[in-house]
Amino acid sequence: MTHSKTLQTILLLTLLCAAVAMGCSKTPPATSSSPNSSPTPASAQSAAIETEIVAPQSIAGVIPATGKILVPEDRVAVIGPVNEGRIVRLYAGQGTRVRKGQKLADLESADIDQAEADYLKALADYENAVRSSAAEVKLAQESYDRNKLLYEQKITAGKNLQSAEHDLEVAKAAGENSVNGTKAALTAARRHLLILGLNDATIDALAKKTDLAATFSLNAPIDGIVVERNATVGASVGTDANLFKIIDLSRVWIDADVFEKDLPRVRPGQEVKLTVTAFPEATFSGKVILINSVVDPDTRTVKVRTEVANPDGRLKPDMFANVQIVTDMNRAAISIPQSAVLNDEGKTIVFVAEGNGYKKRQVQAGIQNNDRVEIVDGLTAGDKVVVKGNYLL
Image (tube, rainbow, N blue to C red; front, top):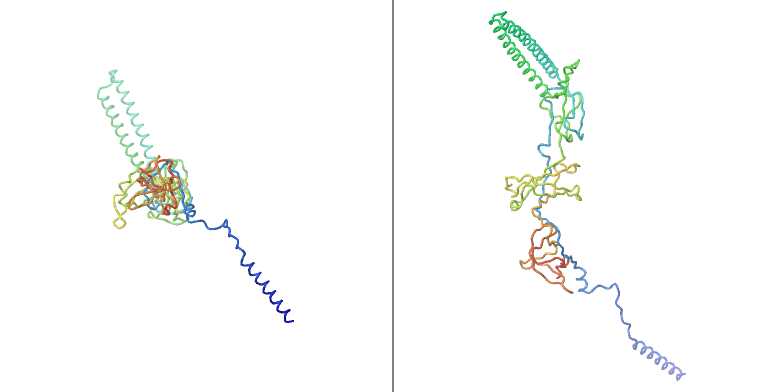
């Protein structure tokens, strides 16, 4: 029994040693590279670099500035009555687009009634003076002609002819004096009606009117949009009242603040590009029309005024605008993005792809704008320039 247990123990130990030996003799499998493993540092650097092939293209030098949109001074009109009256009818309100001469309101006034009566009296006096003068001159002329014939036939004395000639000259002078006097009074009466707000057509029609309504109209002096209306029907207004304000936004001004160091590059007539926050996708074009003569002592800037066409009215007064004054233009320049240009110990350099690598090259910069720079020397068309990732090189 004891011998049998000993054999079992020896057999068990033998099997255990064999198992251990087999486990220790196995070689671990080689680990294969995963297709999603991280790239080597060299491949990461290459992936971060972007290039651009140099080619001639237009580039403009610009002066950036900010400004505010204004309504031109000659495109603003404030309308009010020239005499006291009461508003009886309104034809335009805030936001109404009006044309020059269009009626805005009707007012009634006793002053108009008196002025119309004065005009009609002056018109009648003038017409009577014309007729009376013509009749007197005609009568005197006939008397002179008759006496001249009798004198030539030696029927009447010469003194009678002289008297008739004198009467004719007196009639002409008196008639001319009467006509001129009444004409002056008529002109003054008509001018008074024009000042009170009546137009020529209305005045000419007065002679045919059967009833004189003491009304006058306020008319738009310019094309534009009514931006203010301080009037209500039935309100009595005086000569100091501003009832309507009209602005014409078909063209606007932009006053931009330009630093004094940039003034030598600014001239009237230069092209200007501008954008506004409200319409970031749109670019508006204009021209420099005025360079102010005064420098702001606090900001060291000068106002440069641009006029811009605004037919659709998108540009509104007091909007802020980003302005770019185009000072230089090269339509066949070698230009590259600003990001491609580096400063290396005071030298302007770029990296150019050559063979399987990149070579540093010194260049000379010219015109610059917001995103591109002209290269005057150092690059030629066809060169492949590093425009992104050049800091890695």
